[in-house]
Image (cartoon, rainbow over all chains, first blue to last red; front, side):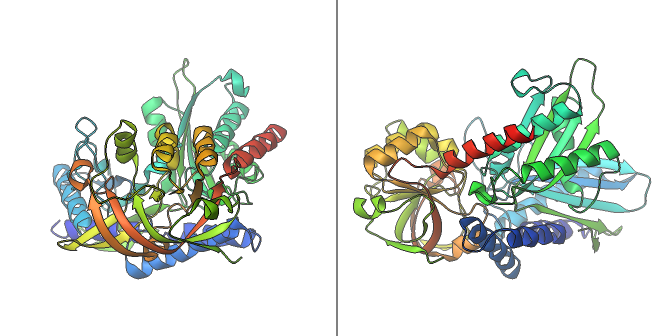
Length: 292
Length: 193
């Protein structure tokens, strides 16, 4: 896979600078919703212009280029250590080129060595499958929106949230109100019902790989997604929390089995600067196709 | 909507004339400062010589900056970071330097609001994530301090901004848009549950 490293650098560049088209459409729709002359409308106009400028200049949409998550599906027999090495090298190169901010800090010493590579960075999620194809998806998730994520252990008495889908709804909507505009709204929620504390959050983030326009194949979760989206957009939090019509652009909910004693609802928030891309690679590691 | 033009020097009178909801464009020299800087100042640490923060403005921002040569920098992306993290420190720093403005995103809490009222300071909300639009309004990087100690995003960058677009969300009269929206959204949610 000699072409792998340059392909990953290009994947990082494009993810950082170019908004995926499904999200861009949702943002344009949200802009039209806001009344002219309001600060919510001008925030959406700045967001829209920012998306155009980033693409045109090939520079980061947001200066917080976030935590780096590669999701890889590859055929059995793939050289996984080789992939991880290429991912680290690609991250270092993309940082030197300014596609990524120097964004990785040693929590013990407080030092930032400027490479973006260290324990946990980049995060590489590897999955072997029987298909001959290699797919690599990338999420860059900023810290502001990561900080407003929340995990609920049901029941929560204060929210009157019991261990059922209505309880989940109450927990998720509480997360929306707690987040206000701090996660750079209008954003998208990724939610996992069930799992444990680690897998719940992990699965909630994985929801961001779905297209905004898709519908959940499980009717119960589809109803919950539509309900939370509709209700959140009636709360008047609006872009940046300035007040306004669009508080969320989408809600995506997945579920994992839980143990009887635990019932977690894990909520991840993705800011409007929803940086997600993906590629199909050929056996030489060259980009064959873009996924979003 | 024609924004109010706010130009340095940022006098107390100019700041006190602003109200929550005002769209403003700021022109002048400001300093970036985020988590490490706020903690350092709050613990009584000094500013490096050359920084004139008194009656100035601090911008909660960790920019992407490329170095083109000695003392030559290029800002590639520079939007605001979440201000709430500085809530434990901000009020003291506003009083210590008689700050006239804090630029950031997401708003701040009650202690900062009180310090703004007392001191004659306002909180200016920039659009989070709008790193390109905002970087374009940075005319020049004049200097950088604490880069080695705190790393590039956490350093103090001395920058000249021109017609930098923001909204007053906390004014010098004790009013906060964030508090208003929080209260109304909570009341609405209670209705829809």
